[in-house]
Every structure is written in structure tokens, then in C-alpha cells.
Image 1 (cartoon, helix red, strand yellow):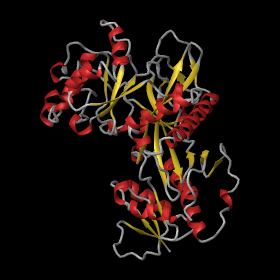
Image 2 (image 1 turned 30 degrees about the vertical axis):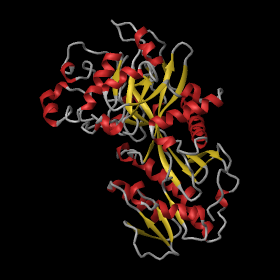
Image 3 (image 1 turned 135 degrees about the vertical axis):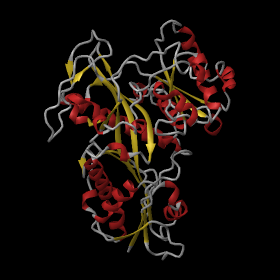
Image 4 (image 1 turned 90 degrees about the horizontal axis):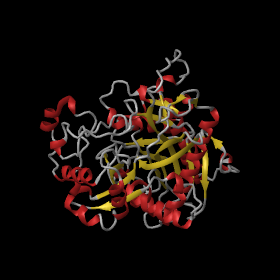
Length: 473
């Protein structure tokens, strides 16, 4: 008998996981809380949010197979992947030992800092941020050529993301973070419609986070118009006027299993910004000058996180399958660039790059054994955010990894593409859950044999298959 703990903050996830488990060939009893007096011999499947599962039970079974059989949906220690400042260190250490890695090109230039007050920046400019300070000092003051993006190391869903182009604007951003009330409801009401995308309740308290990363803002994103995408079963999409491309990032779902296999869902999503792309600019006189944000910056053409678009009634219109972009015109950042359309070979190239990047990302995390400890009786779903840049000089596409997310906000995928999630979770159940349950019953799962890296089964592409710890049984 198998008991399945299914507990999530959102009802959407509860239903998705429950429906997935009900399709398993082995009957499971679904509960929302762990019983205190539960039968210790019952096989336990914990497919729940990190905070609601028992990590002690997970660890006990990984170390003592004779104890209660437990399979859990979250690694206990995986900061090397999901915390932005730890992920930066993971990449730095890995590429230092593997200079030919795809991560050398795939990872934007990044700096990791720790501070609690804005005035601590003065010391960082002569230490951790010395190189960045040199680049900012070299930038022309009249036109901001180089832009940088600030992200809190432990925040998610777009919280605390800001753009800056000089030392003064970064200082003002941190000064605004010092006062947790600086982005309060009264002030947002006073700004009204003039506060177009700069923060909109995305402020953070610096004293509570401390860790931040600064990334190069990639200046040449691949731009297309999502309205040109040909959607199966929908009427012919209208063609957009020339020059109205929008920025998007890729959301790739992957599942890590045991210690360690990695599977990629090849149905990658393209999440679009709500506004047409334009080069970042700052208004020297604007509504935010007195707010400590270094001038008014409209972030809507630049931030593609669907969590920031909750007020947008057409979220589905900003989410496309990557495959649906075949045939869409490419809009270069420069209006003088060549006109071309995305071909099937371009999409295949992007998916292959994503697979290789994620493979080496997990290999890099394995080298950080203190901050990523895979266990054989665990699986976990991650959402990888990546950006494609387009070089119109050599007509090349380059995928860059931005961050990894645990417990990604998959409900923001939208209703139209919900079937993608249904298929993905069913694939995860078949690949990660079913073999564990069958193995406990001494039933050989023939579908797991001879599955080579690069091959796709159950809608999942195997990217990595290594042994770093022993089996759980």
C-alpha cells in the first residue's frame, strides 16, 4: 500500500498532482497531512511543497533502506541551483575548471554581493564590484550604453528586479530598499497610472535579503511578435507591422531524479513581455525621481516574468510554445538588421542548446557537494529561465541561462497550454514515481532499461545519467 502526501499552497497544483497520481497503475491513498501515527511500514510518496514534507523520513530511507520506504518530490539541499547568488558561484567554479563548457557563453556576466545598507556600496566598489565599477565609469554619461539588472538572491516571481546604468542609480535603488514602507500602498496610489512597471508592489526589504546578484542586461534579445504565431486550431494570426517585436524568455521544465538523472520537457514555453521592445532609457525628470529609484524606467518592455502580469487580462496572449514561433519574423534590435523568419532548424538548435546548458548546470551543481546533495529516493521539478540573443552579424542564436526555480509558478502558464503541464506531470510520474513503486514490489520496469542520453520517452528527453550515490533499495 502507498500513501501519497499532496499538499500545495495553490489548489491548481493540488489538482494537477492528484489527477496525475490517479492515473498510476498502482493504487495510492492521497492525504493532505502526514498522520502522526501512520503505519511505519506503508510506502510513503511525498509529492508536496518543500515545507510540508518530512525531510527526516526522506533522509532516513536514503541512509537505511530497511526503514519505511519514502519517495519525496524535493531535494533537501539544493541551494547551488535555486539561490541566484549560489548559482553564480556554482557557475564560476565550474567554468574555471571547464573552460570549454557551453556555460562560458551561456552565463551572463554576473556579480554576487551581500549588503544590508546602501552605504555599504562604497566599500564594495573597491572590492567585489571593482570590475563593474570600472565598466560603469567608462560608460558615457549622456547615453546609457551598458545596462545592468539587479536581482535579490532569494526572491522570486520578479520581486525586487531593477535596471540601472550607473553607480548613482544603483545606490538610489538600494536606498529605496532600506525602507520597507517606501513602496507602500499609499505611495503607489499617489503614483497611480504613472508608475508603469517600475515596481508595482515588487519592492523588497534589503535587511531581510542581504544577498543580491547583478547581471549584465543582454542588449540583443531575440525579438518576435507573438501574434504572428500559428496556433493549432485557431484562425490565422494577423501579421504585425514591421518593427514591433517583443522580448521573451524561455521557460523550460525539467525533472531531476535520484542521484542523478535529468529529464527535459522539450515543449518549451516562450513568455513574452507585455509591451513592444525598446532599448532601455531613463527619464531624468520623471515621477520616480523623488522616490529614490534613479529616474523613471518603464520595465514592461524588458521584464517577461508572467508573475508581473497578473493585471494583464491577456496573459494567455503572452505565452506561446516555442514550436509555435516557427515562421515568425525576427525583429533585430537594430532596424537596419536583416529580415528573416524563425525556421524549424532554429527551434531545434535552441532546444539542443537548452538541453546542453541544463546538463552542464546540474553537473556544475554536483561539484558543489555542500550545497547540492542529491538523494536516490528523491525527484524534483525545476523551471529554468533562459534568454535567446540574436547576432545579426553572423545570423546566430545563443541561449543564456538566467536562473533556476524550485516549485515554479506553473499555474501562470495559462489555460490554453494546460495540456502541456498535464502531459509533463504524467511523464514525471511514469519516469520518476512508477519505477520506484515497481522496484519496491520487485517488478522489473522494462521501460527504464536501455534509455540512452538524448532519447525521448514519455515526452521527456533524458539529458544526464550519472551515479553519485547508491540506490535507495
